[in-house]
Image (cartoon, rainbow, N blue to C red; front, side):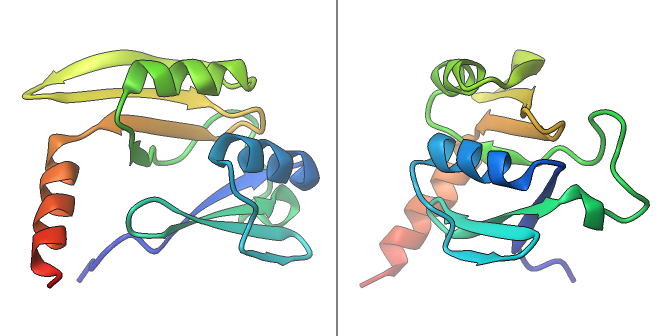
Length: 135
């Protein structure tokens, strides 16, 4: 039934500031924009990260960090965490060794969204196997 991640949506009361912050963090401009929405394509599989004006949030804007935590693979959790903190995010969950090479951490972006980062050996295995299939 669930075939893969398509778009992760985050909310921001100040969309222009969020666009600027994520552009700085990701090092790329959004590939798609419309009033109230910006979207970035990123990573090995070009997953979509959408940032939506919180006026359009179902049930109105949240009053604190909430929702599911989506973890994005990073090659170095400590370095990625430090970069996020240097850009104004606050630590939500300190780096945690989950065993067998898996390490997670999360931050709260300046707009109240939880952003997870993870070193995930499985992700690298899948990426490697897919690269071997391309001939």
